[in-house]
Amino acid sequence: MLTTMGLFSGKVGLIMGVANDRSIAWAIAEALHREGAELAYTHLPGPSNERRVRRLVEAHQPKVFLPCDVQSDDDIANVFSAIEDQYGQLDLVVHAVAFAPPAELRNPYVETTRQGWHVAMDISAYSLVAVSRAARGLMESGGSILTISYFGAEKVMPGYNVMGVCKAALEHSVRYLAWDLGPKNIRVNAISAGPVRTLSSAGIAGFDEMQRHAAHKSPLRRNVDLHELASTAVFLLSEMSSGITGEILHVDCGYNIVGL
Ligand code: NAD
Image 1: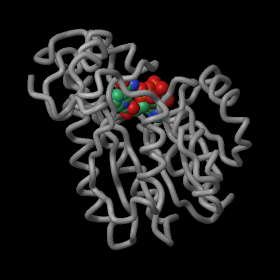
Image 2: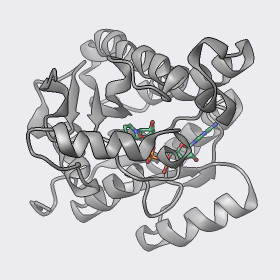
Image 3: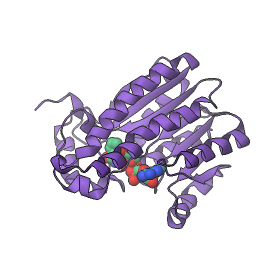
Image 4: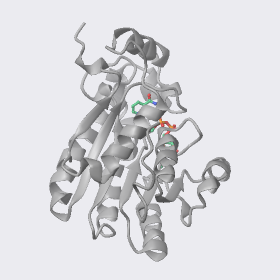
């Protein structure tokens, strides 16, 4: 992994979406920490989630480590008020959060329930809007917000189902948020990540096949790794990408360019 030493010195970042050491959010957090960022973390509520995430992030000595279910406006408000109290500012947000009820990923898309749709959209797409709105007030000197999408937003990936529709909403939210927040020099971008094995991806029916196919068909003839996602995140979160906003950057070994 490329390091430049201190790219984020003096910067404060919020990391949402660490579940374990395979999480994309954790790979990005490690890279930001190496570059000198001061990091705040959220975890899914519940004692076992807290324990598991705490064990990982305590190496970074976070001053803010709080539960946050993104379906709860109170949880979100609580996190941002703690960041304001501790730091008085925020420069970076990593939003790497998604969920769909397992049945919605098992059954055909046409069977998607109203309730499953609402839950998946709320957690996986709306949460970026709520979090960006809360972050705006702490980004007085500008900032950079990053979320993680997947090619299933653009093309049908059998088994990805409602999550593909959520990612389509997420990606277009990135563009609308970029428009709203651009005048405050707050940039909003997404990485469209190739498939990597994590807790979430393990719940997608046919995920192994997605990975095999991507490795076989992508120009680089392999799957992307977590370090490559983290390096691109460093780029998009840093001043190196100061002219880029509203962008969905594919980090997928080129898979998305291939038609057959
Ligand atoms: P992960 O399971 O490690 O991370 C998903 C995170 O979402 C977890 O930390 C979980 O706690 C959090 N989450 C779920 N429901 C939540 C809620 N209600 N409130 C707050 N947090 C909640 O898996 P990951 O693969 O690292 O996923 C991170 C992001 O990357 C997701 O948006 C996922 O869709 C996206 N992504 C993953 C892949 C892949 O192949 N793994 C590819 C493209 C995009």
